[in-house]
Amino acid sequence: MTTLSSTQSNSHGDGSATAAPADYDVAIIGSGLGGLECAHILASQGRRVIVLERWRQPGGCTQGYRRGGYIFDTGMHYVGGLDVGQPLHDAFNELGLLRLPWVRLDAGGFDRVTIGRQSFRLAQGYDRFVDVLAADFPAEREALERYVAAVRQSDNVGDAQMSRQMMETNAWEWLTQNFSDELLVNVVSGASMKLELRKESLPLFTFIHCNGGYISSAWRLRGDGGQIADSLIGDIRRMGGAVVCGAEVVELVEDDGRIVEAVCKDGRRVRAAMFISDVHPAVTMQWLHGSRMARGVYRRRIAMLPDTFGMFTVSVVLKPHTVRYFNHNEYVYRNADVWDFYTKKGPVGGLMVSCRVPEDAHIDASGNVTDSELYATQIDILTPMLWSEVAQWESTSVGRRGDDYKAMKQRRAEECIELASTVVKGLSGAVKEIYTSTPLTYRDYTNTPYGSAFGIRKDYSNALMTQLSVRTPVPNLMLTGQSLILHGLQGVTMTALATVGEISKQYNNR
Image (tube, rainbow, N blue to C red; front, side, top):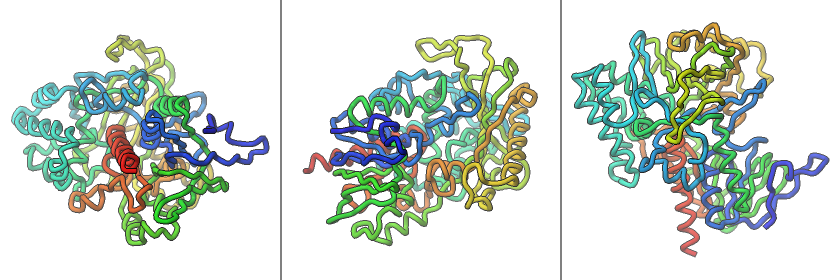
């Protein structure tokens, strides 16, 4: 099999693209984490795999971007459950990702939640998590133990009945019924900017599963999240697979009830026996022109599903030796309104602050930072942003949105830095450079409708409709990615395993 080993080998000297090789076992559209994980597993099984990426850089939300000599993260800031016996350990081991420079966050408070003038620590380890919060809320110890028991239950994704029960339970109602202290509800929910909090619809399973893995153990990388994509891509190519950038799919051609080829915008056509889309399901459905198998009612149903909010990010370069490195994440709220602050008018009401591990940090064999004094060079600040806040610029493209857009981003960045400065000592006077992004940026770079940060919104009252299957009505077209079952690194990885499982079934049934 002829492979394209790099994006450079994919073009002539005049800039025109060569035809991608045909006759792959599996063509994967989109090089986000889910797509790359599927490609890695299938290539390791001896399948002939090609990954088609529309953008010039692979990796989706794991990729970094370079500005002024610095690399910044787009979506990956930390991950949970990497210790032996924990949810992600075996999967990441098989994917070769445990070899990356993982750093264990502070055991006594990997996340710190500040609400108004009160600060609370979320500790690693189920018993310690309960003990630390029970010290602040002694009357709620039994409720905290029930919460942790639910977290442990959610790790058992193979228990279909339990998962369905939790998917059909409203998270806000369960939390407010379990905890009698509303402040504790806000504290337990305070580290939830890795999902969209929504009182009227969020399922308990989504809430607990997205938060629970971090309680078992929490980690961040030394360096940017792009190392994940680089590692997976390197392995895929060494195993004979191809990862091709600048290959924007515009049509999936169906013949006799099966997809036979993907047609790219530049005219190249890629034939394969099986296809996986790691692109948003609504976008995927647009490629099925006149499909006999995926009928209009199915495609319209997916197109009508609402998406989660987007994120506004502030990437900060710090002046040298001004801000101490902090080996945890800070979540900061002006008021006890963690679940709906982002819907209110006024200055930014809540955000997450993540600190990049300094390149000169020493890490021991267990992943612990051993330096007693380190200074930070970069931090990221994230806060939810609704599409309505940027909709007036939706017809514009990156770098061409105008002065009003720049002024809006500048105001929002200043509000973020002001709020973050209440917990990060010296931040306000330490800023050297800032770079910002909005849901419009995410939309243009990741091809996600409305720049959604977490894909399709899950709804406990409509669980079957909003928790999509990896299968589609077209038997050789599968889906993967955060819009299906769960988001976050753990959710996407579990979904990738489910997608590959369906592919294996089809091969075994031949």
